[in-house]
Image 1 (cartoon, rainbow, N blue to C red):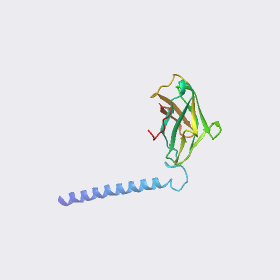
Image 2: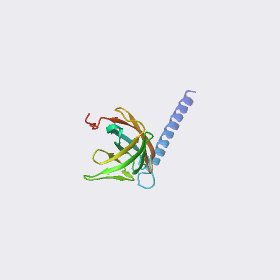
Image 3: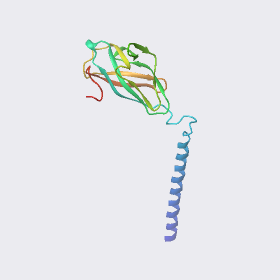
Image 4: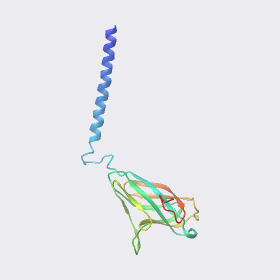
Length: 167
C-alpha cells in the first residue's frame, strides 16, 4: 500500500512538471514569433499615453493655447489627426517657428518616442469656450489618432506663467 501511494505521488509530480515545462515552452515559442520583425507583435502596436497637459489661463476667456506630451511605448508610429472638445467650438493644431505660426493637419507620434506640444513649438489653439475658464477648471480634449483611435483627457487650466517641472 505504501509503495503504491509513493508511486502515485511521483507520477503526479512528474505530470505536473511535464505540464509546466510544456506550457513554458509554448509561451516561449509564442513570444518569440514577433521578434524577427515579420508580422505584428505586441511591441509593434502603438501604445499611447498623455502626460504633462495644461492650458495657460487665457486673457478674458479668449483663445488659449494647449500643451501636452503624447508618449508612444509601442514599436509602431501613429499620427494625431484631430483634436476636439465638448467645451470649445474649435481646437486646431499649430506649429510655430521663429517668425510664423501655421496650422497643421496632422502630427507624428514616433514609435518608442513622444510628440511634445510645448511653448514656442507645436501646440493646440482652443477657441470658442462654452464657458469662460477659471484657474483649476479642466477642459476635456478628445485626441484622435490614425491607428489608436480617440483618447479623451482632462486638461487643467493653469496660471499664465505655469511651466511643468518648474513649479
